[in-house]
Length: 343
Image 1 (cartoon, rainbow, N blue to C red):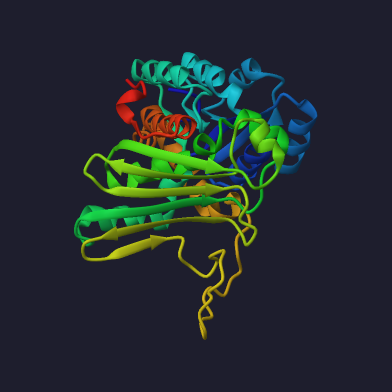
Image 2: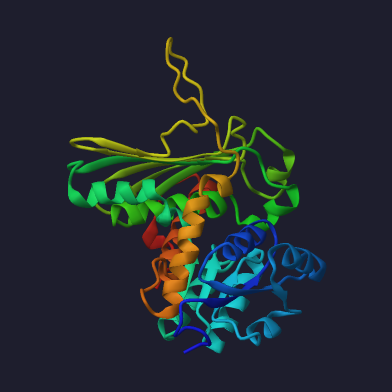
């Protein structure tokens, strides 16, 4: 058992202090179960500045971070660093939380899924929507049968503004970067697998998307293994606010996630004052309670109190759907998931 796991409070190591890493550091520093926080980044000055802000220590590199007596490792580096750090955490026997994606390629994701399956080290992948109250209620509505049979699902991830141009060539493309969250939560809410996809995309914004072989707007029709249709969309340009929603349409009713007064659109109907705002402008603002809940859940995973609520196998299945969408977009044809390698 790692140090401190017999008690309630834990010492956490965090690799990566970029946008999501800094967000996680501030979240972890405010959680009651965190007894100490150690930060590491390729930019030591950035790590030191954030450590001073949140009252954390620092480590010069990953080896020293793992040597710092940590009870859990949180990986929030850029994607190319995920796989190596995850392997290090497993080799050291340290319970590990890793932001998506697990790795930059499908082949390495499969290798890591095999590695974790052969290990007893708990690994939790960061798909925070599983901890959002709305998505959890939608899941219960499906499982209870209150909706009757489900025939159509609409899911969207619409960013308020595009990321920096330098991010796009390393992002993996809009389906792997944005819609992979929709693909994971689709599996979570329905309990079904995706059987086939047909995807497309377009560019009307900045030139750097096309220059990287990417699109700034994507759309896909997914057919689930029980015949349910899912309509998925994404864009980097939703100037009215950050808009992440899901509609689950059933035989006897429909439920919607994200349909509240922060909705990033205006009604064209007379006399309608919905939504009244205020709107949300980033995924961190939209999912702050979910991020707190998932990191608290990771503490339970690290202690052995509960199994991982989002495994590397789950991450692999969402990645396979994203791979199928990218192949479909590139070749302008439907793609069956059987064409995409898995375990």
